[in-house]
Image 1 (cartoon, rainbow, N blue to C red):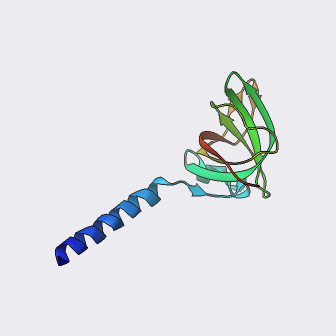
Image 2 (cartoon, rainbow, N blue to C red):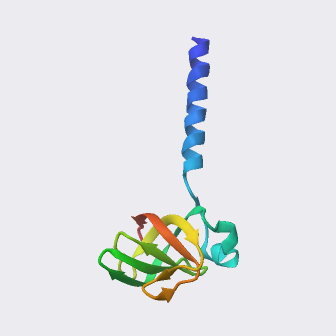
Length: 117
């Protein structure tokens, strides 16, 4: 009985560690813009309001404003509408070109969630 409790506790601890290390850390856009090299090729999450968006055939880019700054997000899933509140998860890249335009530092989206206002 005592051994099964220990194994159960150890299993729960291991599962928690795996879950928490798999989740990207949420950060502010001002922190990303202040030191893009720190976040380059790392997965992060941001939450904010879409201020601008451009899409063509399911690909596109949209700009998120989280109150601390703005950041372009590039996607292959279509773009959210202006004014939408979204959470975006992805990898940070610098020197990104899309449609003949250089976006500087961007988040390449891997997942997106709608957020309540």
